[in-house]
Image (cartoon, rainbow over all chains, first blue to last red):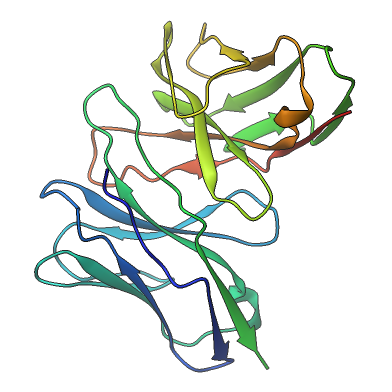
Length: 112
Length: 114
C-alpha cells in the first residue's frame, strides 16, 4: 500500500507561505497524489492533485520531487481560514476498485 | 448544483436499532462511497459503488449494508447499531476516467449509538 507520512502539526504566521510536506516513498508510477483539507468537522475539501509535474491552481501549488517519493503543498499567503487538517493521499484506485487511504493528516494552525 | 447531500445531520440510536443514512448527488457521478471518521483519525472507507447496481466493500464494511439502485442515491444501512459505530459518516462521489478524479464530500452525519 502506498502509505503517506505527514507531520502531526505545523504553525504558520498569517500572510506567510505555508509549506506542508508529505512522504509517499512507495508510490507507483501511475498513482496520483491528492491533497484535501478538512475544516472543523466539515466534509473534506479538494485542494489540488498531481502525477509528476508541479501544479498550481487558485488555492495552492503542489511540488512533487523528481523521484515522486515526496511532495509539498504550498499555500502562498496563508490566512486564518486556512487553519485545518490537511490530508495527503495517494490514489491507488484502479479500474473498478476504489482505494484512497486517508491517514491522520496534519493540523495546520495559522496564527495572527 | 447541490453537490452531495447527506441526511440526517445528527442521529442518536439505541443499541440494536436500525437506520439508513441517506446520500444523494446531482453531478451524475458514477463512483460513490461512504467513509467513517472517528475522533482524531482520518477517514476509512466503508463501502463504495462504481455504478448503479454495483457495490463493493471497503476497509471497514462489517455492520453496514449498501445498495445502488440509481446513479443519484447511495444509502448506507445499519441493521443493528452498536456503540462501536458511533462516528461521523461522510458520503462522497467522483467522476472516474478523467485526469481529475477529485472527491466531492457531503457535510457529514454525526451518529451516536448508546
